[in-house]
Length: 181
Image (cartoon, rainbow, N blue to C red):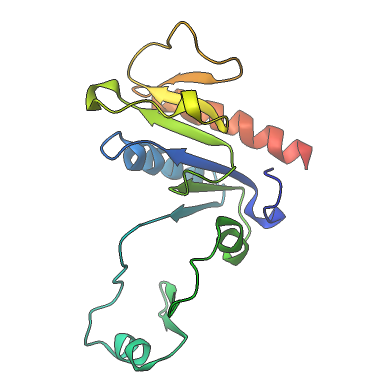
């Protein structure tokens, strides 16, 4: 369990890496397998871009544009709440986690500068530097290359091409977090 995060979030794990590294593909695999095991999984996907979740001329968009602070769109299949910040600061990760329903694990894509445990998805072929040497919160790396010889102690090196091994690592981590409390 990460300090400062709501107990309802369960284990919290950030998934970080450069664009094109395979974060979404790995997350989709993990969510699919965890959900198939009956585990409740939440995902927070951070974006630096504006979010448009409804067609501009729909009633919900019109209410939001008219000045509503929050608009909920509800159906028998799902609901979504659009909350307008209207110049207020972006809520912190802790505040976002507190908004979610209880889960066994919450996977966070983005918020890479937050002090949470993280799994880096690293593909050297992208030509971008690894994040793990400079981020003490990265506890594991999933990569398509072998671990470097001078890997910092405590980092688990996983094969990105064997996502079931990444899942097995995550399940152990979730169990440790659950037992801790």
